[in-house]
Every structure is written in C-alpha cells, then in structure tokens.
Length: 230
Image 1 (cartoon, rainbow, N blue to C red):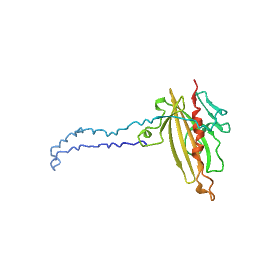
Image 2 (image 1 turned 180 degrees about the vertical axis):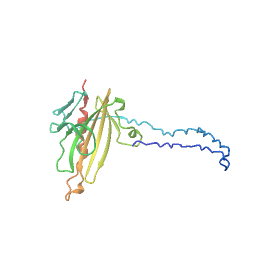
Image 3 (image 1 turned 30 degrees about the vertical axis):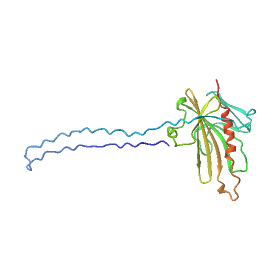
Image 4 (image 1 turned 60 degrees about the vertical axis):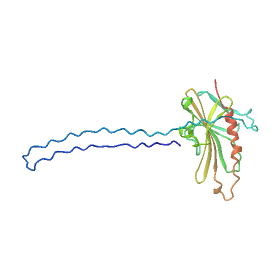
C-alpha cells in the first residue's frame, strides 16, 4: 500500500489598519496604510525514506507431474510473445476480466479444474500495456520491506517475472490471485492467475474444499512455457 505523506499548508494574511479621523464631516480625510505582504519562511518538506525491496531471484521449477509437450500454444504476434496452455482450456480474446480479481480487457484462458469442490473457476487473464521494462513491476507500495511478503522475482529459464499474490472475498465468493509481470523494451505483459470459488458456508452440505496448492501447479507450468518471440 502506497503511503501518502501529508504536508500541512501554511496560510497567512496581513491586515492593514486605517488611521483614525475626526468626527466632523469636514475633517481632513484619513490616509490608508498600504497593506504589506510579509514573506514567511517555507517549511522544510516532510520526507520519508523508502528502502527499495529487491528479493532474491528464484528459479521457477515446472511441476514434475505436468507434461506440457502436448499443450497448445497461445501466440501473440502483435506483441511478440507466446505461452502454452492445456488443450481442454477455452481461449477468449479481447474480453473483460471475468468474475472477481483482475480488471481490464485482455485474453481469458479458462482452465480445467477438479469438479465437485468449492472451486468454481480457474483461469489466467493476459493483459499487455505500453510500459518500459524497468517500470513493469508491482507499484512502489509493494516494494517496501514487509509490506507484501508475497512479492517475488522469478526466472523461468530465460525471462524474469515479478510475482505478487493476494486474496479477496464477498459474502459468498472468494478468489486467490497470483500476478506475473515481465517486460521487454516498451512492452509489459501481465498474467493474472486466478482461483475463484464459492464459500462452503452457503451449502447445507458443504463440498470438499479445493486443493489450491495442487490447482496452482497449472499456473507454474504455464509461466514456465512463456517466451518472447525473436
């Protein structure tokens, strides 16, 4: 969360007084004093040091039990990148982000998941922004030590990603999102990996809770296949 620093503003006014005159209407007119603005000292700005947060770079290890050799390829020729996804998934281009979590317009890839649990949807949402590679990173609020322990910097073998995680919920639903960001030149690719489910409290007979850790392995496998097209 970005800290807002409030600097108080100093307002001032200088009043001019008029010289007193006689009570007679024929008395000599009074001379008004000239209002003079007195310069005030400018207060020193309040500053707060921000220590850059640079996590140790991690190597992304693809899940050993997921074979991506038969996966299909999503290729974005206009922006110069591609990645693989399971053949059972459904790809929807130029759509608004589904359900809760990410926002904007991009490509939604609905992924298969275990049925009969509290999980209702599993997808990645891909967005592209005109942004220099050095700015393709989480907002500065996430860069403060301790502000977000889930900020990571990972390498999939050839490319480096910033990774952040977060959760959200309503009375009936909740979601868990891991966002991956990687940039090249003046392009930033953002890939939001989302698990979306319903609260077990809305069922008279709650279904089994989804195994989020197991379901998230698909996301790691997808990110491991990302590459820029030369």
